[in-house]
Length: 153
Image (cartoon, rainbow, N blue to C red; front, side):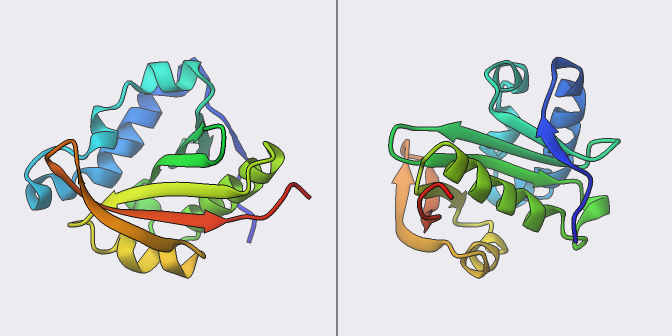
């Protein structure tokens, strides 16, 4: 199923990027004892840097991708709870794969908080392998994942 086209976010999308991100991550605040890092991001700076992709009118899915020299870092993925279970996340993950290949990068990396246990089921279903669990910055207990996406087609 193809959803609304995924497109680069514009400055006009910043409020929606924040709203979708906050809605998607809000339920984790109590569980992990602090706002998840994506809720604290400088969305305006990420949009200005060309790192943010959105889907929907109105926006209901957000993807933050950071190209690194040897991989694509999937910084954040957020789907508004009203659209959960409708394939939006799957489409965003497929976009990340295609974007990595377009950039000539053969690997995607990401991490997720250890208390976001739902993600530990989702990412392996999409080809990600858990590389390690570690404490980052002394406070973030995270599972680090990677996925090979092969060379540019």
